[in-house]
Amino acid sequence: MKRLLHCHQYYFCILLLFISPLFFSCPDMIYAVPSAPSEGFIMDMVPLLGSNGRIKAIAPDCRAMTGFLDGAPFVWSRDFGLVRLAPPKGHFGMGDFLSDDGRSMLGFVSINDAIHPAPYGQTWARPGFIWRYGEPLQYMSKHGIADVEWYGLSADGKTALGYGKRNPPSSPAAAKGKAAENLELTPYYNRWFSVRNRHQFRVLDKIARPDASPYYRLLSRDGKKLLQKQQNNSVQVVDLQTGKLRPLAFGGVLPHASVDLAKGEKRILQAGDPQNPLFRWGRWPGFRRSRILSDSELKKAAPDSPLHADWILDDFFCSIPSFDARFTLCALYLKQVPKKPARPFLLDSKTLTVLVRLDAKGNDIPIDDGPALMGLDISDDGKTILYEMDAEIWIWNEDLLLPHDSIPRPMPLARYLEHFGLSLPSERTIKSAVMSPDGQCFFGELGLYDDEQFPYKQFLACIKGDYPRPRWELHSKKISNRGDQPVR
Image 1 (spheres, rainbow, N blue to C red):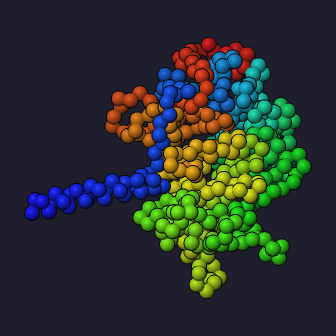
Image 2: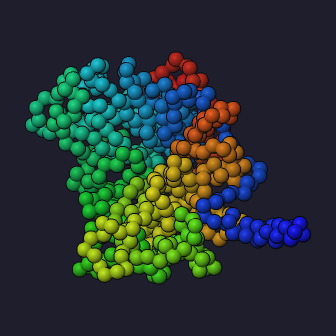
Image 3: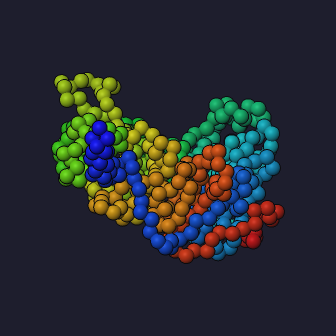
């Protein structure tokens, strides 16, 4: 009996050795092999940001950054140091977008007009401003726009895209006091606008009317294009100079509500079609996430893999353009076309949310899928994509191939940094992150549990380049509303 037991154990161990590579190569188990030595750095940001500070934007090469410190906007640059702006007492402010040289920034302040009188003559809750080094703040109330959301700043700092409210020409006086807290009591128009060459204000109603988006950049960083979404769920790239439109499509397919069959426009992503970006998009039995499969892996794909079904494109989410808008990061909402007799509606169809990189030249690439996906940013060259998956930050780099693989795969940002020799605690995950436009630098916030031994609640990491690390005095009392009085 003992000999038989040892024999079974022996063959069981051989079986484990044989099948282990299969498990470790599956899409739900991504590992990055560390490279050494590290060319970059990782640092604790808590001493610089305090208990309630945050980075919102990082310039290429970690040259500058913006966000908020102690409830007020700030800009730090290697060229001129730290500049802290001073919103009125009782107000909160934050920097949203930053130019590459750190000398231009878009931000806002939040007010409660019932308690604190607004110094800019507005009753709205969120006045927006443009800050430029050495100049006074330029509030958008100067142009009759208030309650501003910013949606992008060009790399050179000359073009800004925003969304705000403007009073109708013949409207009654704005509400005051307690009534001002209810925006429904104050008449207004919603307006998209741009500011070019510092002071050239332009309402964009005649050229573009994108739907408001609460989180994502819509302006390409060359300052020449923006993304607009229509009521039929289509998304278009708008040339701000010519007004020319380029609709976004996935595998040549437009959202089904916008398809014109009379013009021969494609409506369905067909299984087995090599032109369908989901042609190789599948998963192995027992795994929930799909990936691009190699020729040898296609035969192992689960029967319910997306590659075996026909799909229609229902909607776009979180569309973010690269530097010149050739590439676009999108989350797509797809509905499966029933194989049985056609139904008048697809309300009960199987759905799929897939994160993709769209290419103006038609080389669309699926990156990840699942119900809890949200795109965060795309690098200027379109090769690096940052996104959130199941409350964890993931990244995809077109140029990074793992050993024994021929296709770039997404991985958790923490494992990606480890590949470049920058280590974070393996038991903790990155819950939020900001990426620089060159895809080299990251600000992140770690999900801490019961163990408080590791000091990194917030960190800054740069994977390449021997850049000087940011440094400033958090508790300095010197503040400024101009950029010519930096705080050292």
